Image (cartoon, rainbow, N blue to C red):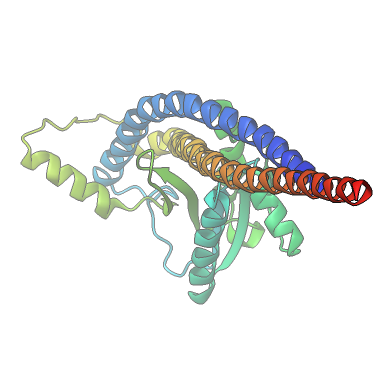
Length: 308
């Protein structure tokens, strides 16, 4: 019984140490969520207004530009997948990877070749383990992305869009990331960045008009095409930056939820082990008492026999 009690005590000590770690990680993730939410809130208006400006240029002129012009028979697409550099976040990265897999299958079903770009070590490790080709990857900044990181990611993608498909260019640019809805809900989404879908933007403007909002009017200098050339990198960079921030907030929320679950499970396991340890200790005490009583009884019998 003594050996069994020692085993329980060692396990309780080990689980208690693990619980302290998971609790600390939960608190760290909770503190980071607030900062990430602020960054998402601050970046969204800029990305939205920039999209409206691009829409205004596209709808206000007949200029054909890679930013807004649909290719009649697209043959190649780029998919940017945003995952995490670290684990301990439940199904955060795996859900984004599954969404990217579904998108890739759909694009290939439409007869398009797919170039995969990945942000985050988890996505890179997934594709590397399966020996799948990755055009380019970036790691090391998913927990706290900056605009400079978004610019580095956007550079090769913009270059691919501006090149001809014969030279390795792409006709479409898609992005897969995890959207931060709330502390409890984070949803993997897939959006097409290029060519920009004007139908959705037009619908947004129509809804705004119904709300009696005054929509901006733009003058294009020196030309609409030059304006689109200038807005193309800004549009892609802002959208990728917003997606990186959304993904970071989602990752911290997923980590907090996973660590809270681990902390609760550790607490339940400690209670269960404590009950088993108490039972083993009680059995050990009972056995010792039984041995003492048995020994005293035997000694009493021996003494009584010798007196006779």
